[in-house]
Length: 634
Image 1 (tube, rainbow, N blue to C red):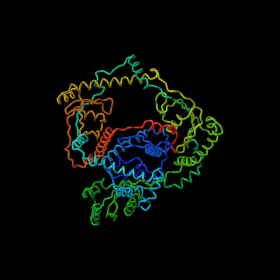
Image 2 (spheres, rainbow, N blue to C red; image 1 turned 90 degrees about the vertical axis):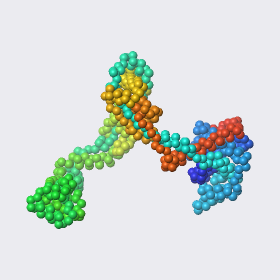
Image 3 (tube, rainbow, N blue to C red; image 1 turned 60 degrees about the vertical axis):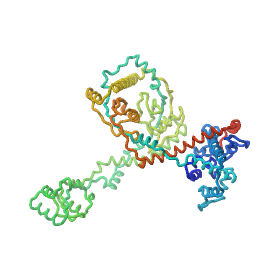
Image 4 (cartoon, helix red, strand yellow; image 1 turned 45 degrees about the horizontal axis):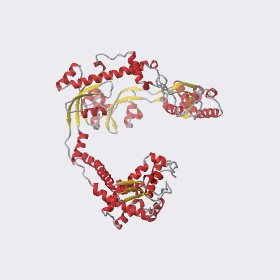
């Protein structure tokens, strides 16, 4: 209903100005959220007042809408935290300002026009698609609103719309703005760059103990040990209940016989197929072969190569044309067939290799078959074992007792962080159902029984056995990491300094080329760079730096690889010609127009409120928002 009413507003002005009550009419209705209020004025704008009753109804509607969105009750305190009362007051004051001016300008709407607007509103149509007065009455009753109040609101809305359309409706988008947006979106830049890395430094920085200690203290939080938890778990998989040795040879032999085709390879032949346009030419080709012409010479005469006609190593069922397949597989040995009337014309075929049919003996595949049978049986057995484990746990057995009774193993994980790392910051890669397990472990407590985790034919039972709180590490625990980080940061700082000095000292194309030659660096070119499309190898920050530069200027940035620096020169910057009639320009204008209209109307309303004066009855507002503040809205 809410969406339908929104869609019924035919202009942007309607969408901006449509009143909260009209916006939110719904058959589910609203309640008097605050209740017991005096029907007095809560705000005044010029000579127009906003009643407390109107504010109460609008607030109730907005809270109802929020409850439907988050699908849970909302108290007045919570609604205030969302800023809903302020939003409602702001909307009502805006409407009052426009209403005040509309009244002074004697704006109005005829009864016939108002009647047509209400009758044509799709929100009030019945099952037959026609205006349904009974349905309208039900909606009004559900929203604690009389018909006269509704008509009055509709009339005020129509008058506000007239005023708003006269202020901002149909505004044109200035060409200056369109050109500026066009230039921003379409400008194309080209740079050339040389790459600097740590090898360009005269010497890599070497830290002293004091350097490392100072660095560690300044970045202590980076090396802080997270909370670790110790866990015990049982991981039940198909392999735990599979027993291929228990599968008899007779059962395996039965499967072998049932699936004999899967253990056999049919005869295959390597075939070359030469197609002729007519039977006469095919017969002539066969005659040449019988007269001593080689197959290769015949192919050369036909202007084809062996690769063009090679069908590869194929089985009879792989060949599309059954007539050709019969002829090929009727040859007793390698050689050339007679002319065959194929589906796509007469052909000659040559068989160059024959791979005999083969069947794997039972003894070679018996172990594989028994594994498959055991796995199929385990799929049923694993649920029986699971039920037994669950019964034991429900009876008070520990994980160790459960494991012993079911020939399973309890795995102890000494320490795991919430991210699945051990105490050396190495990922524990073999945790079963790791995402679910880690989430469950960090939602549990020590020695608490947890529901089992279930995967694809696997189950995990677990418990937290200990918790080690997060703490600050000492430098002695992470010396190599601190040293590597210090060298990384100092190297980055040195590269930044070098790149900055080089770019500042460059002043000409010749200087840039000389710099590249002196350092034996290739010059890379990056062209067709735009603000919006990006460029491989360049980050958004890199592109922003490029577009902040003047044509011909030099600069530097850190590319996607943080160990590199690019010293660059902006060699070209151009903006494609602007044409207002272009589709892209029209799309920009279409997107910008609503923002301009809304901005103009916002400024107009702000000026109205300043000139008319806005008075808010703060004591009454405070009284209305108190008392039932923590009571959920029903």
